[in-house]
Length: 212
Image (cartoon, rainbow, N blue to C red; front, side, top):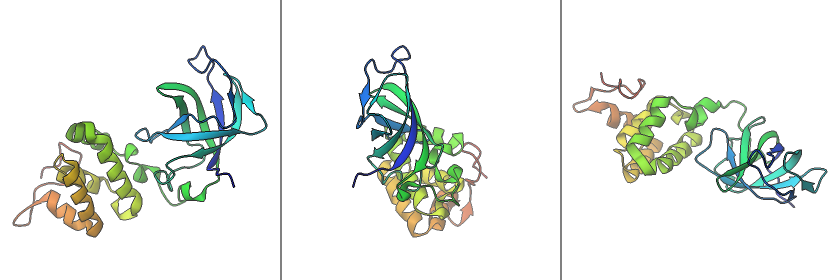
């Protein structure tokens, strides 16, 4: 049985807009970049509904099957927008209208602003990039996996403490993530306190204002 993850409305750019110069057929497989998840590109097979061939500039509904479904588990929702590309060139834009794969559907009681690290405050994203540099994407994916795994970890305070306690090193960040999984209170002790049990930082505050 053919895998279908969701149904989407697609709008292909014209060649004048930078899109393809030739039509596409069903089973066209461009890369997909979802809004709010720019750090992870996936391949998305398009099976057109009611047509076999789509010309540049046309709109069409399509069944989409993506790779890397594990990364998007419980993160996709209706009306989520995306673009589809060939390499660095954007071919068109899409919007999810129905989730077929239940493993991908955002839980009804989940909030994208707590689940999606890309929607966290700007100071967090800026600190990740400045501290981890070329490894910031990897650091983001590791933290994203953590906050997706448990609602207890979906906290600006915990994420700031993780970034700080990671000491700008991926290996150390991984150790702090495991510490958090064991008991997130130990992470906060590590990041906010200096012995003997004196609190010197408050990561409820933005980076730059965390010192007490």
